[in-house]
Image (cartoon, rainbow, N blue to C red; front, top):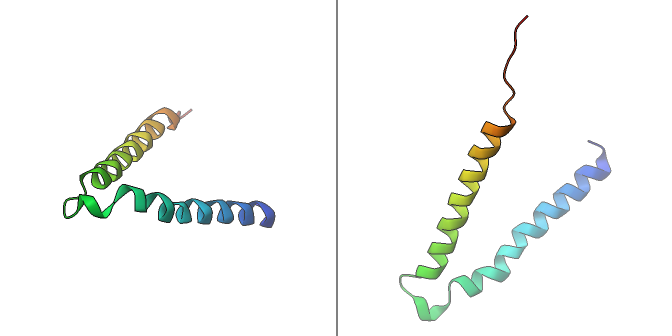
Length: 68
């Protein structure tokens, strides 16, 4: 990758990481303590979605090895 592409990629990842500070306060309101069911439900769902996407892409993008 060129330096420009790496710089843009790092900025994008940093922006997405900082976005968690914004939506986190809405997922864990103080009225839901001590269980925070909505916040933990959303995070668990996102983790499951990430795992499912990883497994699906791993299976779909894995190229069969052919030996000649």
